[in-house]
Image 1 (cartoon, helix red, strand yellow):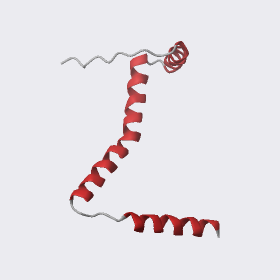
Image 2: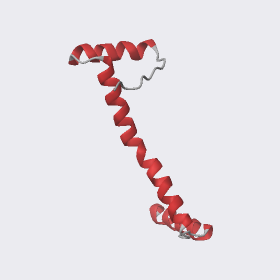
Image 3: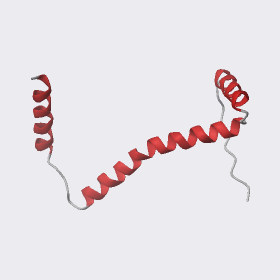
Length: 82
């Protein structure tokens, strides 16, 4: 089964740098682009997981009122300036 094709435009400088990397490593552009995309998605996926966890906590009624949160941050600021 063939993989889906992803197509997008990039600046000439990025292509030049990608080509230099490809030549130096004896790997094609696709290898490096796929690797960079996988790394980016791995690094950024924590954000989606945190949002999902927050929604689950809110749906379960595990909420903290705004005044408690404000007090926490005020205290944290006081402790850092001391």
